[in-house]
Image (cartoon, rainbow, N blue to C red; front, side, top):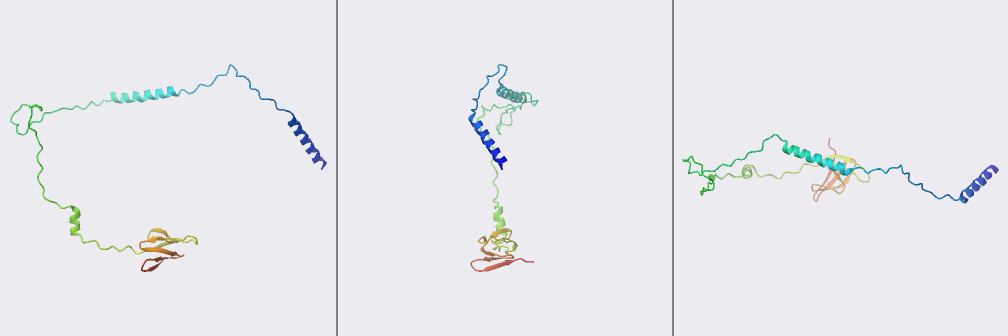
Length: 186
């Protein structure tokens, strides 16, 4: 026990000595004249070279293509009644306007939908497919069931029915006029 007490006394004494001795202030040394400051990266030069390359490629594509330019020729239009002469008539001198031929009248053709509606019988009321229980995901807190390809929970609506209860192997649906209990079919 005395060894521990001696060690504690020595530790306290060393802490007092460290607290009593002031730390010397920090001194910065001057910069050596041989040190060089790093130069910034020449971004401006890189951007100028890139722009020159893009402009050069554009000019090369424009003037270096081997395809001849498209030739456009203008021809004078002759009136329909003046076919006997072989002399070209200037366009500006022609006072008679040439119109395209008028379209021929066509007979009335009914729309395809009207024809189909007249031929086909009126659509009867299509009954919704019967509801079928396809699966149950039972959980005491929030059970769910798969009915007609949709996952439903208690309170959801399927068609005109509302889901009121889901058990381990059944689901109860209620509408305004009937109650339906769905079970697994084999």
